[in-house]
Every structure is written in C-alpha cells, then in structure tokens.
Length: 239
Image 1 (cartoon, helix red, strand yellow):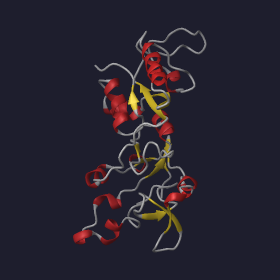
Image 2: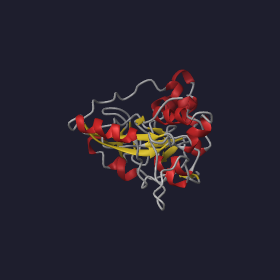
Image 3: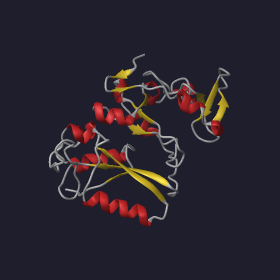
Image 4: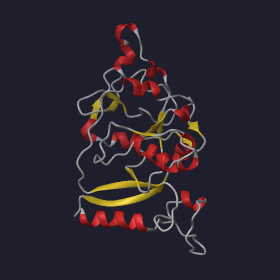
C-alpha cells in the first residue's frame, strides 16, 4: 500500500468527494457513505482513489467483482490513486490523466495516475467506453500550456534582470512568473470578445513526462498534455 512516488504522491480527496451532495449514496455492501461516479451510476466509498496506491476498482466495480464470463478485466488489478496534477507535472515524470467522471463545468478537477503506483492505465483505457460529454462554455476558466519560449511570440522575463528569456530555466516551472508575448496577448483578446463565455485563461508549463514521451518536439509534448486532460489547450506554433 504505497503512497505513490516522490514528486507525484497520492493525495486524499475524501473531503472533495464527500462534498458532492448531489452524488451522495450509501455503499450497498458496507453501508458506509459514498458517492456515485456518475449521476445514477455506481456508488463507491468516499475514500475511493485516495491516499494510497491500491486496486481501488477491484472491490467497487461490478465488472471486477462478478467478472463477466468468469473473467475479471485486467484493469481491476491495476493499482492507482488520485494525485495533484500540477505537482506531478512540475516535480515528476509520471503520467497523469484527468478523470472523465467530472465535466469541465462541474467545479471539480480530479486527476489520477497509474504510473506513480508502478502500474499502467492501458487496460483501463482499453475497456473505457463511456465518456462524460463536454459542456458548452459558460463562464469557464481555461487552462493553457506554453510549450517553450519563442520571442516575441511567447516568453517569460528574468525575475531579476527583467530581460526576455529565449531559453527555459527553473522559472519556466514557476507559475508565479507570468508569460508575455504576442500569443498570450492575442488569447486575452479572445477572452474579452467572448463576452463572459470564457471567464479567464490561466497559463502553465508542459509536464516533464510529456517531454520524455516526445523528446523531438516540445510542441507535440504540450499537445500530449491536452490529450491527457492536464490542460484544455496549448498556445504556440506547431513544428
């Protein structure tokens, strides 16, 4: 029962899941309080996915308990846990995915990792067939990544000298240092003309693991983060 790897530890999301009153339920097998993964769907304990690398689905998912045709799916035996996506992207090289059980306008962002538990998400993705549909924008906040610096299009300034930087350093992974340039300015103009449809846009860095997966293109690496649900979009040029 490991707590995940250093740089991408498991976190306790029990309080968050307990707060989802519209999904509250009672776990039939134990009588303990829980929440439904989807509205009207499976009821799991509020501790589901939290704090430790466990086979969280093995004792909660009917497909894992009953084993259709006598065969228990491989994903049931894969340990995983909820993690802090920002910490993992900045401090580790672990794969992290956004949970599809919560729509982007639900006010809940949950992220999980199998690799921090020395496991793989491949078996889960092989059987996952139903996705929560994305809702239309409604005063939403968009999280966008900047793949790298490209003066004058997108860059950061040295916090001390205030010179524009053309190579990334430790400041690249510090979200307190703002991005500047033509692209961020253009995107901000889109926010203004959306007339409230887009509430605001926050910028962040690409994850370290995406760079490992796509070492020849930082722009492709940033798109990988979009696919994994870590960010909503990437701002920059393709190459």
